[in-house]
Image (cartoon, rainbow, N blue to C red; front, side):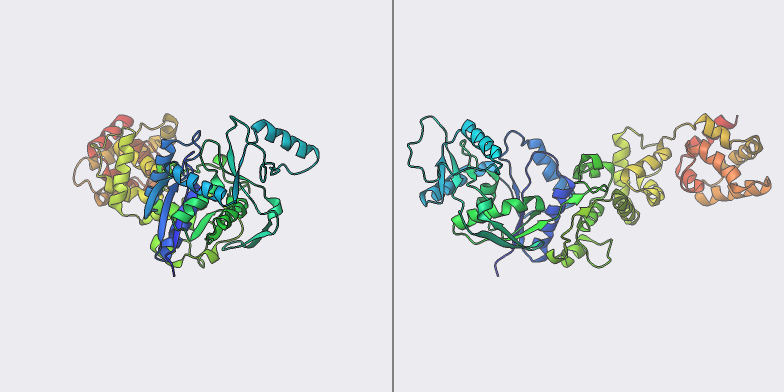
Length: 461
């Protein structure tokens, strides 16, 4: 059996979006599962919209996710001579021809077809023409599409698909400027690169019959096709910017872990029993195309948030500490007046759905804001001022550990016959500027003692 080779072939006209990342993941996993090879191809023939920034965004997104490739990136614009060679071969063999119809002629043809209630399509006027080509009119090259019969293929996800050749026309394979059209370029590329399985989004299903006719004109064997259903938003519409973050790098910037996003994407339209959380090694071991749903998948940000939270809770503290430090430093938070980032990460990670939330929470350990006056007035009652002053005196001496701080707080509550929240809440608000933190004794133990005492003295008078 020949080596299985899959590919991911994005157009560099924007970022790597969620749908593209899932397609890449499935193609990558299929190759890895079968000991095959995964190729990265950049389809950059749309020169007006393709940018180097988009190329870099795609490479960055794949690299961050850990989707590695064995060959590439291969750029289509570096292969123009090859496409022209194959197109000329098809012309010489009678499978393609030059068309000299002008844009104005084609527009008029389509208008007449619409007026007759017909589907607009090229009418084959240059297919077998013996006319002398008009001077100074650049020619395109069109495929001689079969006039009868059917294109039949068995999609590995969708099952058998049949399209009548009469539904297709003689489409352009080479533009007048010598750049291939999509349906021609991908066939030449996939043949040259030995792609055995074309795994892509089902928005390409309608392109497949045209591409199959190119394969047949070249006398080439077909690859296997597998078209993955699209991803929908919660409203049932196709996933787009209005559904929130759809760029892979945006999720990275918002503080999602790559393994969490990969895990979530793997479960979008594919399943393995009831498993919700699994490693990429497990995914590759389990992955097959038979368990990809034929129905569109629905993107659920809440589910992704839950999964990311699970991964953050289980993540290595040292890694989270590095991520935390980078995020705090990026917004100018001084790190020298506070605990080691690993200690802060360990304390706050159980509360964080994202790394951004982790940084937001841990901020108060390094640069706490002053409490809102209304919040302070709500919790700092006359009944607790003296107990808090007394507690501050106790905290000024002895060990500065969580155990010691907890013992002092409990003693003060008992001595003054208070309920724990009566003392803890104003202590929390004064020390951190927030009413919601992890256990306050743990927070104080990681905060500089002098800073805590200074804030207590200042607000208690």
